[in-house]
Image (cartoon, rainbow, N blue to C red; front, side, top):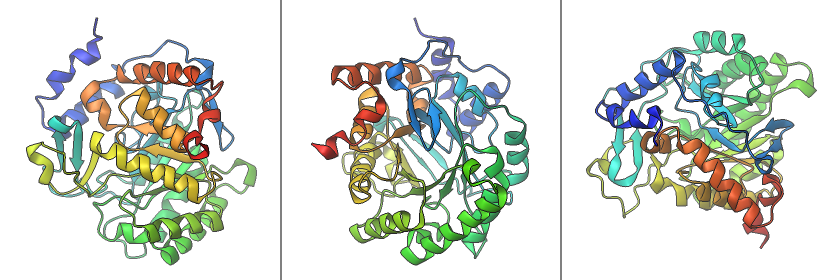
Length: 356
């Protein structure tokens, strides 16, 4: 029997994508979200950056831009949640329509452009929330008009670092002009150095500083990947999120909206993201924990990401098509796969395919 939240999916699909998403956030804020009360199997528990995750399946940034419902999503069964991308100043983002459901491809395209209310309400919300349900990540970006992009990351990191379990510098959205240029070797090294200093100012005790993660694009050539891996290793960044949405359009896509501009997420992104997860794991010798993100829609997808080198994984777009019942289903499927292959813990499977 389907739960009420899954039954509401067809109703939400009658609304334009952005309106449906806003309605979902409001319902969650009103306490109308699902609750997964089934304890996670111990095989799913893992520890990364000194943080304990009851399961490795997280909610990616983009769903909860303003940190309005992180605890509601943890209650729904996610092992961790990430809110953002938030920019220092409010900004409207790009003109509407700017979100598109590609139902024929189980995919989405967005060109939102870091729309949001800015840091002030975001920080107020995260400052008053409790901790304990699971790790919370704050995802930071730059305003469209800011010329010194690193300055915006400094402002954002310094503001949220005292309240987040981990920090993400999003330098890879395709919808903010010039943002992906920050993945260049010299610009990236400078930005990371400044952000690490901002984190130190916000949290003087080195042992209490949240780890800093850099979120990269899937649309990188071999030289870009080599540069990013080198900078991350040299600067002491704590991890990578691999990867953001893509500007690629795989040839087997059939939805009429495929030609819309923006970042593609969902099922067509999965093989692209999976390949770069494995590649960045190998380039860093498995020494830099990776959050695997991009098109995950099943326990098999999550398991493939983990075997490729992801320590933990994230999803968002699949919820649009499968609803919140997807969360416990992925955890159940992942549990079966880990045990089938003789792994006692998630961590034992990380990078297994790179070691074969």
